Amino acid sequence: MHSLRLKLILGFLLVLAAVIAGFDVFVYTAQRHALMHALDGRLFAATQAAARYLEIESGQPVFDPARENSARPPLPRVFRIMDEKGNILGQSPGPISFSWPTAKAGDPNPRRTTIRPDRGVNWRISTWTERLETDAGNSAKARPEGEASIGIVVQCAESLAFSAKELRELSSLLALVSLAAILIAGGGSYMLAGKALRPIRRVTAALETVSETNLDQRLDPSSFDVELHPLITRLNAALDRLEKGFQRERQFTADASHELRTPLAALLSAIEVLLRRPRPEAELIEAHRDNEKTARSMQAVVEGLLLLARMDAGKAAPARESVAPAALVEDVFSSIGIETAAKSVRLVQIIDPAFRVQADPAQLRLALLNLIDNAVRYNRPGGHVSVEAGRTGGDAVIEIRDTGIGIPRENQPRVFERFYRVDPSRAEATGGCGLGLSIVRKIIEGHGGRVSVSSGPEGSVFTIVLPDA
Ligand code: ADP
Image (cartoon, rainbow, N blue to C red; front, side, top):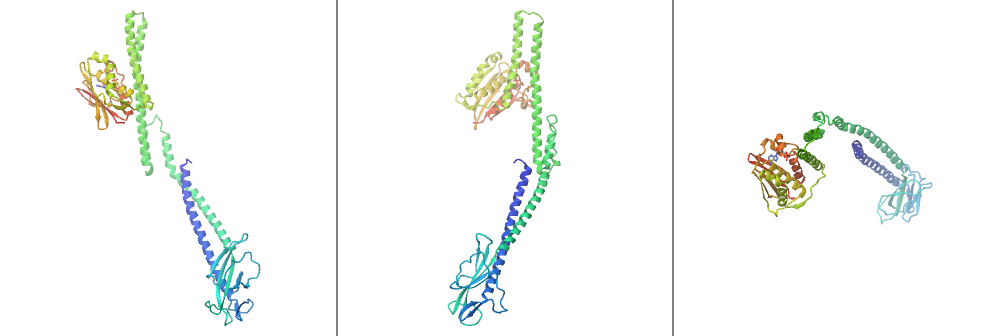
């Protein structure tokens, strides 16, 4: 079940049904108790009345309903009177559909029993035992046991048919009223739930109008109920993030196209010039070298973009291995050796060969390559680059320090953005594709770490912090 409205209605009706059922059971039980109480009262009075029809004659109790006695109440409809030996002294005429429960004189008074025959209606029996004096007087009179007295048992019965009918009627009435209450409450809760959910439909309608072309649209919390304000605020925040994400995406696509368009145009025009007339072989080789350089820079951009796209999509989750940064740095130093020599930049590493970090070796090498390569490219001739590593607290820290041109303070926060260059006019000279630092940040953040820069006129320091995995 996925409908909130249905859940609200069913939840409410369930609680209501439980309350009504409790109420019904209470009313039914109270009524049943009251009926039985009244019945037992009537039956007890009936046993008393029947006992008044006993007379003592020659020391023996005699049942004589015919004898004239205006003080006697009418005889009950169903009764029997026995002496203490179990002899029937008198009983109501006509057949009865149940068997009397056994009773002895001296049983505690009064005793009530409900007889449930296999067929037909139930009967309620009241049994009353008493001792009558046998030595004097005409009418039966109770006196304590042990003297000249005889025990008698009077039983009266009344069918429970009437009470059962009343209770049946009461149940039907209760069921009818309860059903009506649930139906009315169901209808009411359907309307109320609809009303309560209306703001959600309004939010939905407002969101339906949002598309990538008008992501600047926001919902006004003041036009919604106060309970919905947190939802509206979070939706607006999500729209903010979405808008920024879309903007970044658009900017990125524009930058990427621009980044590839310039070298591609240069490559095409160089080829066009070459094709205009036959060229000597030396000139052709020279032109091919230039074109190859251009194509390689385009390849670097495309590969950088592909790598970032894979990392953005979470498809380049880093492996966790024990890696020695000293060995990685050494490897990087040797791979950029020619460039370094050309600029006479000195490379130094101050890392304990035994020092190890938990990282993806290929990814960490690529991050170090980008940072050390930058440190050489943006260095001054004869400068130097030093790499240090160690542990601070629980974190592994790697620092790449150079004596290069530095990064102005206002540009430092942006150098990790894709295609951002402090001085775009120098891109040609330094040969970077503008993606190096964004790849570094992506890799380090993928390891749960962070990378930062601090820089001044005397050079820059890039710091990688890797948490101890
Ligand atoms: P690029 O390929 O242009 O080097 P990066 O993403 O690696 O792209 O770096 C972005 C920009 O940050 C560079 O264009 C450069 O202006 C600046 N930068 C990066 N590293 C250094 C450094 N060690 N010294 C000075 N500037 C640097």
